[in-house]
Length: 432
View 1 (cartoon, one colour):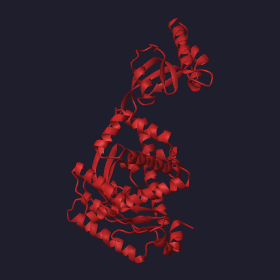
View 2 (cartoon, one colour; view 1 turned 30 degrees about the vertical axis):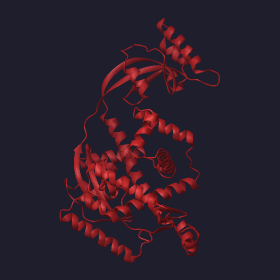
View 3 (cartoon, helix red, strand yellow; view 1 turned 180 degrees about the vertical axis):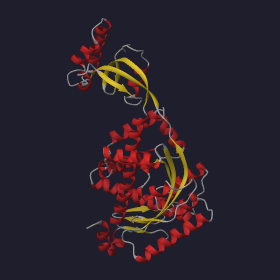
View 4 (tube, helix red, strand yellow; view 1 turned 135 degrees about the horizontal axis):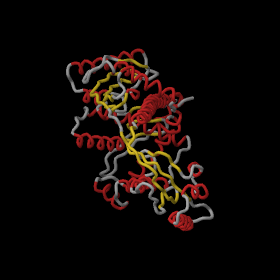
């Protein structure tokens, strides 16, 4: 039995059991329940806090806000989806311990080149409670892990799909183009009655009529759309051909910049799309480096100091004329490259961790580095060759793989969220 069925069966008891009156106390504003989500609730205070955050974001971006009642409903729908994901994460045993959370916050501070103390000061200056910030970050990690487990890790891309994708691009003459697309969705619940479907179609037709009359697409999207991008004006961002949802792809290639589509119908609802812009990608020439290295790592017996000393001894031997390849074969703990004398073959920018790449790029041809640490252990690296390489084809294949994966992820996540929402018991209490 899903949550919807379960809660409908016990609904007569809910009011007396969990929907308790909230009494205002001496100067504290009245709080009340705005939605019941399975066994949990969303309070007016939660909704108002999120409305303030979104409103401030709109103002900073100079964007026009949807009417208050529409903005309130859209934000509440987003909070419901968040609540459902967190409930599922808890139910399936996904937890985020304090150590993981602290490490994530430290990384955020480090990436911003500030200390943890400075991060807390910035949050306080922006009127953000530190404990609430930690809790929001914990929730985000939980939802990310849940999506990875239930959706992302199940999405695969085959070599045949990549070949088909690239072949279709060539046939359509779209191989080097990217598209900026905006989208409006009028969602149809799986349990919708015929009357509800007629009403939703009427709303979609009215929105299309407003667009045909010249009303701004972003404004109509933010006030009408049920998609996750509604509050971004329906903007799906820049996408390669393979990233465009299958439902839209045939239309997009025959649209001019600024065109708005006719009504599109799918199992999830009614769609309107706009082709906002088109741009071409460029040929990619990169500097590749062929290098070899020796890697030693700590273990139960050898401490970091022990490994550093051994690496210094190997460095002295290399300076004395010992063969790099033979030392790599005899000592390196990177088994894959050790068998080839430490050869890492041709490396593109970004193929290795930043500290390794930075030091490697500072070396002349045939120069051998002093021992240095990374997250993987201690290294000695030698640069053998450099070349300028046309990496366009490899980049196209990587982009094709990512484009196909992203399209599949978008479709899988939308279906997953819709199913989660349809299986849940949700009761709106706005205005009550």
